[in-house]
Length: 184
Image 1 (spheres, rainbow, N blue to C red):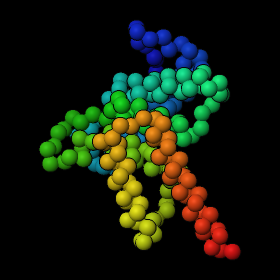
Image 2: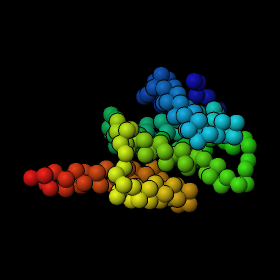
Image 3: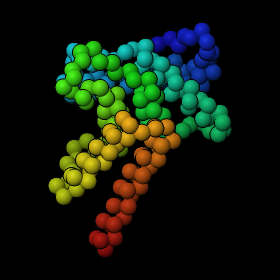
Protein backbone atom coordinates (compact mmCIF):
# COMPACT_ATOMS: atom_id res chain seq x y z
CA UNK A 1 0.00 0.00 0.00
CA UNK A 2 1.43 3.34 -0.95
CA UNK A 3 0.36 6.54 0.76
CA UNK A 4 0.27 9.38 -1.75
CA UNK A 5 -1.52 12.67 -1.55
CA UNK A 6 -0.17 15.87 -3.05
CA UNK A 7 -1.60 18.00 -0.25
CA UNK A 8 -0.13 16.06 2.65
CA UNK A 9 3.21 14.65 3.65
CA UNK A 10 2.83 11.30 5.36
CA UNK A 11 6.53 10.59 5.81
CA UNK A 12 6.32 11.08 9.61
CA UNK A 13 3.49 8.54 9.81
CA UNK A 14 5.40 6.02 7.72
CA UNK A 15 8.52 6.59 9.83
CA UNK A 16 6.53 6.15 13.06
CA UNK A 17 4.50 3.06 12.11
CA UNK A 18 6.10 1.55 9.03
CA UNK A 19 4.34 0.56 5.85
CA UNK A 20 3.91 -3.05 7.04
CA UNK A 21 1.87 -2.07 10.11
CA UNK A 22 -0.34 0.28 8.09
CA UNK A 23 -0.86 -2.36 5.43
CA UNK A 24 -1.68 -4.98 8.07
CA UNK A 25 -4.34 -2.71 9.62
CA UNK A 26 -5.85 -2.15 6.17
CA UNK A 27 -5.96 -5.90 5.43
CA UNK A 28 -7.41 -6.75 8.85
CA UNK A 29 -10.22 -4.24 8.39
CA UNK A 30 -10.77 -5.40 4.82
CA UNK A 31 -11.10 -9.00 6.02
CA UNK A 32 -13.55 -7.96 8.79
CA UNK A 33 -15.60 -6.08 6.23
CA UNK A 34 -15.65 -9.01 3.82
CA UNK A 35 -16.84 -11.32 6.62
CA UNK A 36 -19.48 -8.76 7.61
CA UNK A 37 -20.75 -8.55 4.02
CA UNK A 38 -21.03 -12.34 3.84
CA UNK A 39 -22.63 -12.68 7.29
CA UNK A 40 -25.34 -10.17 6.36
CA UNK A 41 -25.78 -11.52 2.83
CA UNK A 42 -24.77 -8.23 1.20
CA UNK A 43 -22.71 -9.87 -1.57
CA UNK A 44 -23.45 -8.03 -4.82
CA UNK A 45 -25.23 -5.28 -2.87
CA UNK A 46 -22.41 -3.71 -0.85
CA UNK A 47 -18.72 -3.43 -1.72
CA UNK A 48 -15.60 -2.18 0.01
CA UNK A 49 -14.30 1.01 -1.61
CA UNK A 50 -10.55 0.39 -1.43
CA UNK A 51 -9.54 4.05 -1.72
CA UNK A 52 -12.01 5.07 0.99
CA UNK A 53 -10.85 2.33 3.37
CA UNK A 54 -7.27 3.34 2.59
CA UNK A 55 -8.07 6.94 3.55
CA UNK A 56 -9.78 5.83 6.77
CA UNK A 57 -6.68 3.83 7.73
CA UNK A 58 -4.38 6.76 6.90
CA UNK A 59 -6.59 9.13 8.91
CA UNK A 60 -6.50 6.72 11.85
CA UNK A 61 -2.70 6.54 11.81
CA UNK A 62 -2.44 10.33 11.41
CA UNK A 63 -4.60 10.78 14.52
CA UNK A 64 -2.61 8.23 16.50
CA UNK A 65 0.63 9.86 15.39
CA UNK A 66 -0.64 13.23 16.67
CA UNK A 67 -1.80 11.65 19.96
CA UNK A 68 1.56 10.02 20.55
CA UNK A 69 3.42 13.23 19.74
CA UNK A 70 1.14 15.47 21.81
CA UNK A 71 1.09 13.21 24.89
CA UNK A 72 4.71 12.03 24.54
CA UNK A 73 3.74 8.35 24.61
CA UNK A 74 5.16 5.35 22.78
CA UNK A 75 1.89 3.53 22.20
CA UNK A 76 -1.83 3.96 22.75
CA UNK A 77 -4.12 1.51 24.52
CA UNK A 78 -6.51 -0.91 22.83
CA UNK A 79 -9.55 1.21 23.67
CA UNK A 80 -8.12 4.13 21.71
CA UNK A 81 -7.08 1.87 18.84
CA UNK A 82 -10.63 0.60 18.41
CA UNK A 83 -12.32 3.93 19.12
CA UNK A 84 -10.22 5.82 16.57
CA UNK A 85 -10.53 3.05 13.99
CA UNK A 86 -14.31 2.98 14.42
CA UNK A 87 -14.51 6.75 14.21
CA UNK A 88 -12.66 6.94 10.89
CA UNK A 89 -14.70 4.12 9.40
CA UNK A 90 -17.85 6.02 10.36
CA UNK A 91 -16.45 9.24 8.99
CA UNK A 92 -15.20 7.89 5.66
CA UNK A 93 -17.85 5.15 5.06
CA UNK A 94 -15.81 2.60 3.07
CA UNK A 95 -18.73 0.21 2.66
CA UNK A 96 -20.58 1.39 -0.43
CA UNK A 97 -24.04 0.35 -1.60
CA UNK A 98 -24.10 -0.83 -5.21
CA UNK A 99 -27.63 -2.26 -5.23
CA UNK A 100 -30.16 -0.01 -3.56
CA UNK A 101 -33.29 -1.31 -1.90
CA UNK A 102 -35.95 1.05 -0.53
CA UNK A 103 -37.34 -1.87 1.48
CA UNK A 104 -34.03 -2.49 3.27
CA UNK A 105 -33.45 0.58 5.45
CA UNK A 106 -30.63 -1.25 7.23
CA UNK A 107 -28.54 -1.17 4.07
CA UNK A 108 -28.49 2.64 4.20
CA UNK A 109 -26.65 2.34 7.52
CA UNK A 110 -24.26 -0.42 6.54
CA UNK A 111 -21.17 1.42 7.84
CA UNK A 112 -22.79 2.14 11.21
CA UNK A 113 -23.92 -1.48 11.48
CA UNK A 114 -20.40 -2.64 10.63
CA UNK A 115 -18.86 -0.35 13.25
CA UNK A 116 -21.29 -1.64 15.91
CA UNK A 117 -20.30 -5.19 14.96
CA UNK A 118 -16.59 -4.26 15.00
CA UNK A 119 -16.85 -2.70 18.47
CA UNK A 120 -18.91 -5.59 19.87
CA UNK A 121 -16.37 -8.06 18.49
CA UNK A 122 -13.64 -6.14 20.33
CA UNK A 123 -15.66 -6.08 23.55
CA UNK A 124 -16.26 -9.84 23.36
CA UNK A 125 -12.55 -10.45 22.93
CA UNK A 126 -11.76 -14.13 22.91
CA UNK A 127 -15.24 -14.96 24.20
CA UNK A 128 -16.83 -15.69 20.81
CA UNK A 129 -18.89 -18.69 21.93
CA UNK A 130 -20.62 -17.04 24.88
CA UNK A 131 -24.38 -17.24 24.79
CA UNK A 132 -26.14 -14.47 26.66
CA UNK A 133 -28.28 -15.98 29.41
CA UNK A 134 -32.00 -15.66 28.72
CA UNK A 135 -32.80 -13.21 31.54
CA UNK A 136 -29.98 -10.87 30.36
CA UNK A 137 -30.61 -11.14 26.62
CA UNK A 138 -33.01 -8.18 26.50
CA UNK A 139 -30.49 -5.93 28.29
CA UNK A 140 -27.74 -6.93 25.86
CA UNK A 141 -29.96 -6.51 22.79
CA UNK A 142 -31.03 -3.07 24.04
CA UNK A 143 -27.37 -2.11 24.34
CA UNK A 144 -26.73 -3.23 20.75
CA UNK A 145 -29.83 -1.39 19.52
CA UNK A 146 -28.81 1.77 21.39
CA UNK A 147 -25.24 1.54 20.08
CA UNK A 148 -26.45 1.27 16.48
CA UNK A 149 -28.89 4.16 17.01
CA UNK A 150 -26.12 6.29 18.51
CA UNK A 151 -23.76 5.54 15.61
CA UNK A 152 -26.48 6.49 13.11
CA UNK A 153 -27.96 9.64 14.60
CA UNK A 154 -25.67 11.18 17.21
CA UNK A 155 -22.45 13.15 17.06
CA UNK A 156 -19.66 10.62 17.30
CA UNK A 157 -16.09 11.39 18.30
CA UNK A 158 -13.24 9.01 19.05
CA UNK A 159 -13.34 10.16 22.66
CA UNK A 160 -17.04 9.32 23.02
CA UNK A 161 -16.46 5.89 21.49
CA UNK A 162 -13.59 5.33 23.90
CA UNK A 163 -15.89 6.23 26.80
CA UNK A 164 -18.54 3.78 25.54
CA UNK A 165 -15.93 1.01 25.43
CA UNK A 166 -14.63 1.92 28.90
CA UNK A 167 -18.17 1.96 30.30
CA UNK A 168 -18.89 -1.47 28.87
CA UNK A 169 -15.69 -2.88 30.36
CA UNK A 170 -16.43 -1.21 33.69
CA UNK A 171 -19.85 -2.90 33.68
CA UNK A 172 -18.19 -6.26 33.13
CA UNK A 173 -15.73 -5.59 35.97
CA UNK A 174 -18.61 -4.62 38.24
CA UNK A 175 -20.57 -7.78 37.37
CA UNK A 176 -17.51 -9.98 37.99
CA UNK A 177 -16.98 -8.28 41.35
CA UNK A 178 -20.61 -8.81 42.35
CA UNK A 179 -20.39 -12.45 41.30
CA UNK A 180 -17.11 -12.99 43.20
CA UNK A 181 -18.56 -11.42 46.35
CA UNK A 182 -21.70 -13.54 46.11
CA UNK A 183 -19.53 -16.69 46.01
CA UNK A 184 -17.95 -15.91 49.40
